[in-house]
Image 1 (cartoon, helix red, strand yellow):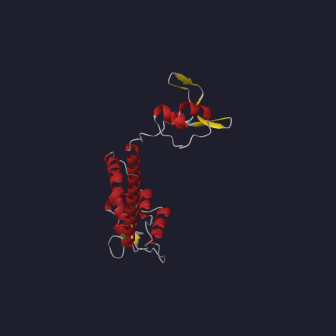
Image 2 (cartoon, one colour):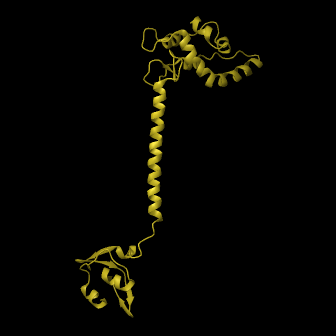
Image 3 (cartoon, one colour):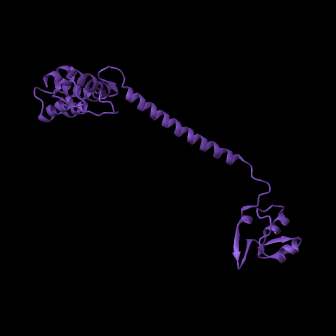
Length: 212
C-alpha cells in the first residue's frame, strides 16, 4: 500500500490520512491483479491509470473543494471514493496491456484502441453517406415537376358502385350536367387528361358513348 501511496500526487496522498480503510486497501490489491492476465506493477498502475484520471478529471473536481475546506479551518474529507474510481480497471479494448488507451509496456498509444476508433469513424462516415444519399434522392424527387398529363388525385380515385368502378364527381359539359359517375374516358374528354387506364373500365358505357 505504501508503495502505491508514495507515487500518488502529493495533494491526494496528504488528504488520505495515515491509514486507509479496508475497502480501499482491497481496491489497490485488486487493481494490481497479481498473477492475472491484466497484472500491473505499482509504477504501471499509478502512471497509466491513476495519474491520467487525476489530471484529466479528479484534480479539477477535488482541489478547489479542499482549498475551501482548508481556508475555513476544516480538514478536507478523505477522497476514498474518487481514489477507488481512479484505481478501477476499465478495459476499452481487447488488449490486456491497455490502460486508458495507452500500452503499459511500450508506452505508446494502444493500437487496438486506435483500430477501434478508426472502425467507429468509418461506421459514422458510412451512416452519414447513406443519410446524404437518401436526402439527395428525396430532394430530386421533390424537385421533379409533375407530369402534365397526369390525372388529378380526385379523378384517379375510384369507388365501387354495384359491379362498376368509376370516379365520383358531378361535372358539366356542353351545357349538360352529368350527374353521379364519370368514367376515366369522360374525364379525358372533358379536361384533356390522360388516364392511367388506357381503356375505359366497365363504368357507364352510355356515358362514354355520349361524350366520344
